[in-house]
Amino acid sequence: MQCNLVKYDKAWKEAWNEAVEQARQSSFLFLRDFMDYHKERFADRSLLIFDTHGQLLALLPACIDPHCPRRILSHGGLTYGGLLLLPRATTVLVGEIMQSIISHYAAEGFTEMIYKPLPYIYHQYPAEEDLYWLFRFGARLTGRTVSSAISLPHPYPLSTLRQRKVRKASRTEALRIDDSTTHLPEFWQMLQAVLQERHHVNPVHSLSELRLLADRFPRHIRLLTVHLSADEHPADAPNHIVAGSLLFITSTVAHVQYIAANDEGCRLSALDWLFSQLPTWLSHHAPEAKYLDFGISTEQGGNYLNEGLIFQKEGFGARAVCYDLYTLPLTFSGSSHLQVSAQS
Image 1 (cartoon, one colour):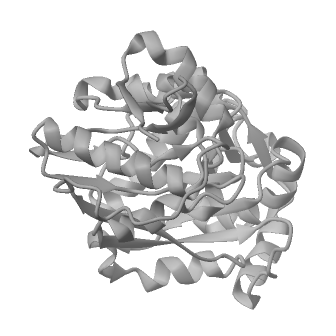
Image 2: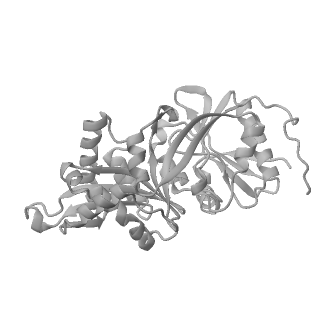
Image 3: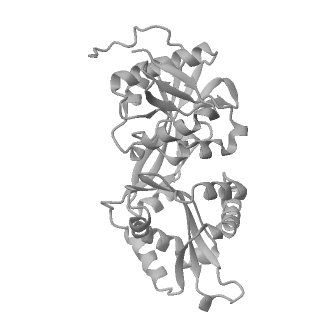
């Protein structure tokens, strides 16, 4: 079966978004209102893949590498990318799809693709056909970062240290949790101060970008902040924030995008207390989520592991999930690689 590839443009926005919602592995990050919020930074080369009867089989979010014009990224503006497979895309079909993609980009003058498949925790149904064909077409694993996630239906218990810190915070009866993005400016200021002081960097998203995205995706982007009650803080600042976490919530994963605590929050172990409450909060506000992902603890493409950081995350019962990066040469030109037996 021959595949028909169509370059994405805004005329395909509705069809693209509908397919994102139907894909076996997905995330709201692939909806065009998220992908395109910083479109001026990335030259889009996304593809829609159809069969010969006009039925959509898959999507490929992709762009040109801003640092290498002969390289395709899937996707440069997102944590992950790769093929989004609709239910009908079988293993043999995915091989033909990837063969067509390689030929398409090679014909346009690109020499390689950086491919970042979605980790399995984002799968609503098994969808690792692309990993098999990456192997078959000579892709190399060139990056692997380690994240830490909790299985929400069957969480491991907190470590003794984390339990002790949660008990300490629980004795502070003035602590309370608020769920509202109206506190985003104050949280972002605290986040920026913490990142500057400890790591000499700024948040990946600006405050205006986070406001824009939170307005576009109020169901998926949630801000939980820890406050001190008015009894413990001056009346002129009743919304005093000591810690907080910004969550990106997909159909299967609640991802901790940002966390921050000021000196007072650290003294009170406010983040430990917040994370101990998160599974219960998610069971009410995002019951479909199967995993709580704390994010990566590696640097330099995975070559350095921050052992102190991952120790803290694993203290909440989280265990490793890998976010991989493959380099795929776009030199495939024949059919000899695709040796399969198919029935039609």
